[in-house]
Image (cartoon, rainbow, N blue to C red):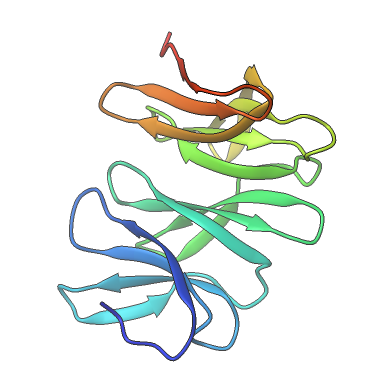
Amino acid sequence: LVPSTGSDGAPAFSPVDDRVAFVSDRSGAQQLWLNDPASGETWPLTESDEPTLRYPVWRPDGAKLLITARGASMGRLIEIDIATRTRRVLTSDTEDVRYGVYGLDPATYIAVVGGSGEGRELIAFENRKDAETHRRVVARDVGRIDYDHVLATVYFTKIAQPGLFKLDPA
């Protein structure tokens, strides 16, 4: 879709149009990029000071993206506003975020938090007016998650237990 001499990966297709977000080192440093086939343009959404970027996730209305930024020992969840190309860190520096998705409401998100030695928790966050307003642990020992926006359901795997698990939206 977007020729490059760099390494491209982790494509995430917009839920509302033909745009695709992806991680690439085409500029010399790993960045989150956006390709818009309607305009024929591709541009970076992040700057070169980011650590390793993983798992871009679109908000259901296509206005914003979540990206997990992993440093040497910690990770954080960052939200990118597509229209303004501004970024906002959603999680505190003390939380080791592994992966995150949007919740049913645009001001909510769900993240796997914790290192491999401390046990990973699935945490639901509410973030109103640019500040965390509510936080609750909804599952423990979580490996990977995904969110079905149609059914308002979180699916996840556990690290020490086989199977696919589902959280009730209530």
